[in-house]
Amino acid sequence: MIFALLEAMRPRQWTKNAVLFAGLVFDRQLHLGNLSAILRTFAGFVIFCLLSGVVYIINDVSDVEADRRHPEKKRRPIASGRLPVNVGLAFAGLVLAATLPAAYLLSPGFALVAAAYLLLNLAYSRWIKHIPLLDVLSIAMGFVLRVAGGVTVIHVARFSPWLYVVITLGALYIGFGKRRAELALLADDANAHRRVLDGYTLPLLDQFLNIVSSTTIIAYSLYTFSAPNLPDNHTMMLTIPFVLYGVFRYMYLIQVKHRGGAPEEVLLSDRPLQATILLWGLAVLIILYTFPKTLAAP
Image 1 (cartoon, rainbow, N blue to C red):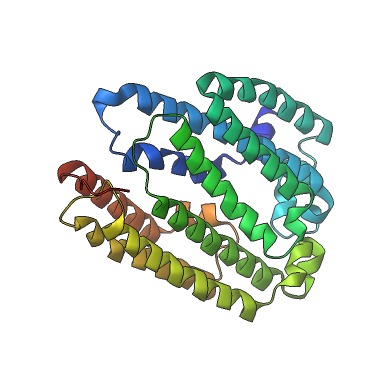
Image 2: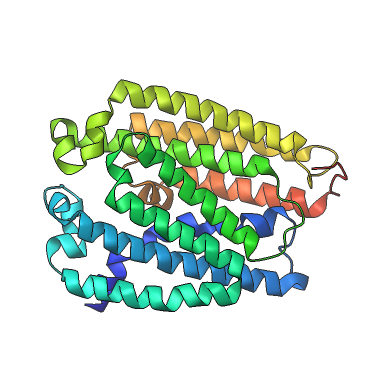
């Protein structure tokens, strides 16, 4: 039962919460002299992992009948019967009773963001996931709230609005890619497994992916040479090729390898994509923490 509860919280999905560290990293606070901010951000990360786990349990309870007809989701603990519905809901309630007060103790502002994230995802599980376009937009909003949570839990002097734009567009890119992979996998039975897929077609999703991938690259490029708190010599532009390759690699995986229905599985299994993210992260850290920052106004 314990393993079933942990599996139902989908710890492999918790990688998405890593964006909480964006405020810490891009405000140049990731150093040993600022251990308090690092620990507070990590505590916020843990709280969001627990909250997202609760959301996944509630979502699985809501979708239990549809999941039992799905070729892959039928193996989930609740859909397979390994985890009784009443046990899953009771556990979710206990986790909420612990995490929401902990979020408030960490920071009242962070608690508001965490509550907004929870309410958004509950609305998604109940209604929004059945509405085309709004379903993917709400997923993107979830990433924005994660970033906002990381910013509110510590004092951030300068956090570029461009990063919010880039994260929103990147989340839309992954969300539309997920919908495309699901539609391609389920084919004519797509509506029986996920009702919202009836509002999409493969050509439409390909157009969305082209638009969002292009604007993601443009927004990130603009960030690298126009955002505050970046080096005066514009060396952050050297990270653009990693973003280009990452966007292209993900589209290759979606359209050629027919993957992407579970983005976290792609992230944890595709070595070229992992190498790209690692090299991008190292380049960002070296540039931000080696070169002097610009004094330009936000």
